[in-house]
Length: 264
Image 1 (tube, rainbow, N blue to C red):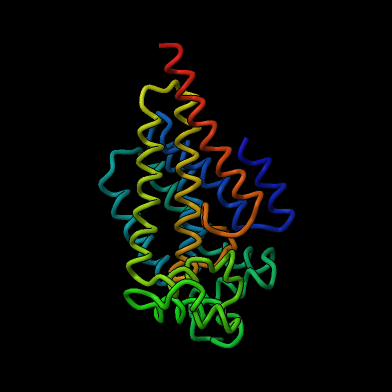
Image 2: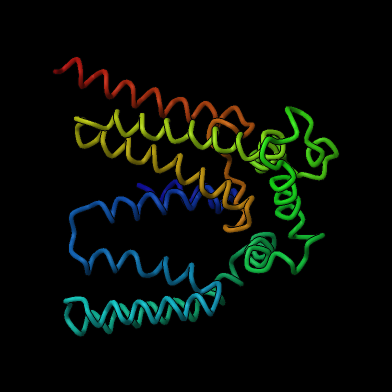
């Protein structure tokens, strides 16, 4: 179910948004009642792929994973199998990524690993975003008074870098208030999930995961702690279709809750 939309979105190409469906699949795997072998079989490949982008991080992961396998109760053959899978994927993933990724995707990964390598080229967006966030200070410069946005130094200030634009104008206090509003949204969804049937519960869980996924990837990309993906910030980034989809999710959650109350 998750693979089909992932293939369609990947053909756009939009790896950032497509990765959400793969992440949703793994979330379901983690929550599903299954044994440790099954979970490791699905989880180890993407983790090894992700950590292979940096050899130091990958080496640290291998050491930690080896210690985990030594102490966990599992057949020795399965331990060897999982460790071998992690090693093989980690060693050959960089070659595969270099072949199949687009040039701009490679540049985003390289910039993420080393922002200072090309601050006026591929690192320009993140650098200007960090400048905008830092220049906002505690109280911000005021609504529509941001210099990075006003002088067009900040790219895509209305969509991909909306958080940097918001931070420059409203500062640290404004960001705290924004995070508080998101926190209230997530708490409200969690309250709606009480006493739901299995389908409604899973849908609600994937909805809050979708919001959190977009939230962390969007803001993390602007802060330079995650690669830029172009994923919008829920309810804040410009885009009618995305905004409509978010409100559609919330409407369905309310409908699920109302249906349950009517049955009760």
